[in-house]
Image (cartoon, rainbow over all chains, first blue to last red; front, side, top):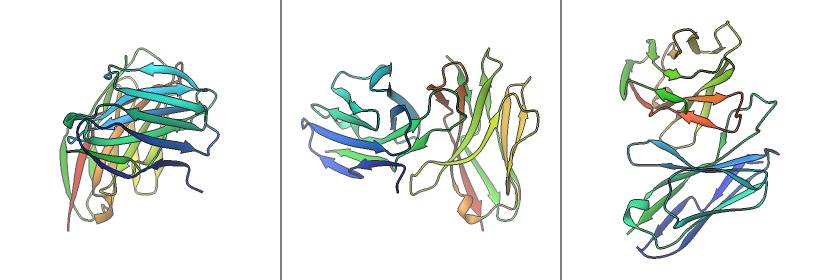
Length: 114
Length: 115
């Protein structure tokens, strides 16, 4: 009965490869997010989707492409991986309006690019 | 955009003692929500406590309480009777009531608990 799940939890890959991280939430929330946490633990918002529509798109290389097939899923695809992409990526979800809900986070995916 | 500032990158506390983590934010809104999240070494982000800006009473959750000063735009977290399991990164976060799907996080405070 995990609220927000991500797969995989660990991902080790070579520079130049393409990889995807999947996220699913079973909370019925209408908004989902991707964050990047670097080695200094800074949390940086990358994308946000509300009911499958992109609403936040921070300055992120276009090698990163989010895809939301439905409001319970938000996947992150990364092309041509670079060393600087190594980080922990968190998926999160929340309810937009009429709610005091906090963001619920997935367990994170530690991406290591060699 | 709103900004959230945590001015203490690192803090330490003796076991069983009390520690206060600082957080300030910048906003022109009157209605919003504030949160403290804990991130232990397991890296899971866990909500510690939340505060609605329209409530004057400070939120409390067991050993965790906040000092919410709306005029000063300050939202500090007090941990009483610190335990070894409290060692973690703590993040302060702001959520607008107007644009409810946007959250702003501080840079975090790393808390060490000394046995």
